[in-house]
Image (tube, rainbow over all chains, first blue to last red; front, side, top):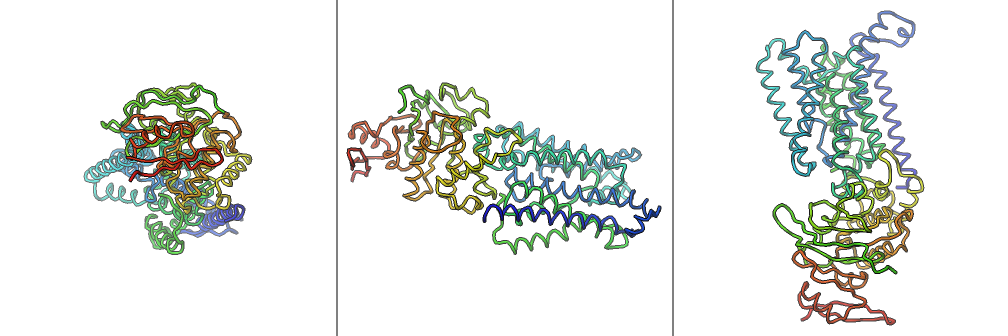
Length: 332
Length: 274
């Protein structure tokens, strides 16, 4: 492919995904239990404005940012670990966050925002333990990070199970289960500023370091000879990606599949791994979560877990891309 | 022509994997402007030596390169001075070939800095020099193994490091491409080939080779390795043929060298003795 046309087509893909994201966000702002209309909103209808500001706006912002963040973080994990099956949960962030949320549901029921804060702390703690353990292994290779992550994941699952056993089945257990299934239902304007700020800052770091992230995909010894301080850079990048994911799922609960799917879809479309692919991973993640969330609140009389729809839309889309693409881009 | 002081001096390099000792005190010298070939049977420690020199595995002994002790350099400085091409390159994700070549500029770029237009132009020149001009925007993963080796050679060209360490860079190449690669390498160390921006006037190349014929033709100096030590150092253009036959027979079994000289220049062929 000629350079111009390749770069133009990647830019066009990103632009198209951006337009799609805006359209999905607009739909997300208007659709729901209380349908809103643009004329009424612009006309200053007080009731509609209240719904818009307290419910729709934070929810839509969180869906767009959260989906973008999970998609971009998935790109980082798959690239750094050279593993197409790598996902943000691989080194323990989701299971740590789940255990943290369950802890707060059980023991801190009266503290405002405790579940979110505990989930955020739990996610970071789990990844911290995994990275710390892997640092003890000689060399600190990718493999030992993954293994330590698996161990910490198992440990966090055990903690979660113990907390579930101790939970009151009527209320607490249900809260834990709902949290794990993920929902944007509980997103309020008061809850999100801190987590959105963390997420945006960490995302900015990921985008600034994208060239180093690509270099980390090169075999370790070779990368070092290319002047990459592999150990420190990988730690920095993984911490940034973990902050991205933890800041989102501590607000929304565990959202499955986006971190795995969005980067795959992006690569199948661009057949590349440079900056536009990172951006496209995020944009597609945002579109997917916005649509999933619209369906979660619109498909049935009650609010459904958003992860049902991320998988339901995501899996066929991924299959379509695999069947359509001949071979696709390499990532592992 | 290089002067007589060694540019690269190895003394007593020992290394291994876990408890297994592979190198038992390797010592030799190499000159700037020359390609030095590493020859030896499989398992004699060629790859281990190259890995030890770029500190991928712990080692004992000293290696001086251009007056600096390699073990005392920071990781970044080491990356700036050494260009390393492993047997199989570890670029495992889809990227345009040009992007792989641009990685060669990384040791001299800031953490958040992007390669400049001028650097991109130089990367394209290097791709053209290795015969991959047409493939510059092709996905690296879709290149043949030989093309990948040439692409990584182009990366080493733009890296413009003072020490080239290459581990069987010719293994996937066909006959004409092997010769092309060796000519390019000779040009790179002697400063004739367009490399980076000329920041590094003196270069030496240490290249592990499978093919003794290639080594005899293109390397000014051959280091023969056996059982983790340097068994002999040969100068194919100067040394006596019987001496070289004896040294090479120590490694490859009984061999015969024939001089097929052209225009007064020695050209050696090696055959196994029947």
